[in-house]
Image (tube, rainbow, N blue to C red; front, side, top):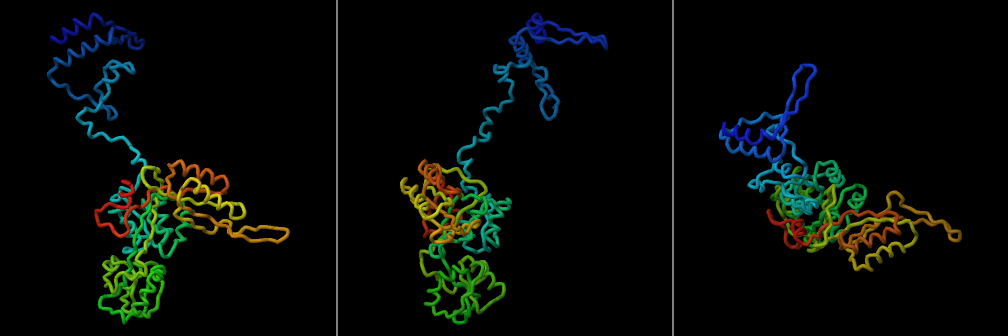
Amino acid sequence: MEAAAAIRGTAAPRMRLAGRSSRGSGTAAARAIPASRSDWQTACAILSSTNDTPAPPAPKVNGQNNNNKLAAPAVPGSEDAVSGLDLVPAAGAGNLPRPLSISDLSPAPLHGAQLRVAYQGVPGAYSEAAAGKAYPGCEAIPCDQFEVAFQAVELWIADRAVLPVENSLGGSIHRNYDLLLRHRLHIVGEVQLPVHHCLLALPGVRRELLARVISHPQALAQCEHTLTRMGLNVAREAFDDTAGAAEHIAAHALRDTAAIASARAAELYGLQVLADGVQDDAGNVTRFVMLAREPIIPRTDRPFKTSIVLAHDLEGTSVLFKVLSAFAFRDISLTKIESRPHRHRPIRLVDDANIGTAKHFEYMFYIDFQASMADVRAQNALAEIQEFTSFLRVLGSYPMDMTPWDAAPSPGSPSASDQQQRG
């Protein structure tokens, strides 16, 4: 009652009634309008300070509280408009989502435990080991072909793909270079994996009982001299991949056959290691690229590498010289240059009245250089190259793998992508 009297004593003299007649019912609707906002706030403050009994919650309309149903409208930009917002109290500020940063927009592979990574081969393949080095704890998805791994990422079956592109002894894997151009995936990282071959056979099998050795063609070539020095006069037969050869021996109980594969393949398929480290060269390293649907944002605070592919319509070798000069003048180091046949125009005819018609092979050029696309030097180099090339595409600008070759990562150790992120 005292509160009501206080309101009557303060607010009522300053309030007026506005009536409007209703022709249908003969009644008049009246509403109270405050003379000023300060008087209205004073009246509300008296009510809130004297009402000890909590009011029942207001009904919800469309899932929203209707507590401010009778509140006077606030002028935009005024203190009343700000005070009327449902602001989160300061105590709960720690639960608010943090703002996006450059690392969120540049998903450098730090989410290994959440990623599905496609690779070519079966469990125990070196590509599986490369996927584990790039993304520790990932869900590795085996694919029977390289192109299936590309498609798995494009169709959202996998989040990343880890595929080999070159070996220090066997050279480039040309199939994957062609697929990089055919598909629209982006290179987001690289990982270099030392290859350690083992000679595997069924338990109890001795070397002198072997009649053949099966493995991937490159693995057979990388171990040819070692097998000869071991006195193994056996047939060499090519197989789809190294771990697949080990699986084939175990599945068919082939006691006259050995496989060249990894030690992990021996554990997975119950084989024994007849000889360890049978590769001819200890410096046997395979370079893998990590592929994703979206590129990462290039940076300049750590070593980056950029991969491009280009083609030209002009005659002679002067275009290639101009391409190399664009990098040399800006002191940009090239780490690889690879030529592949131009699939859409493999042969170009040149008609000369004095000599006749000549046929020239057309090539695409794949180039890797040590610079980030965030570097002005790289931007200017590509701008110059684009002037005399008919086709230019950036396959990816990504952190270089700076991890040492002689240390294989153990479970829980930092991945190659972690090292690249920390620089």
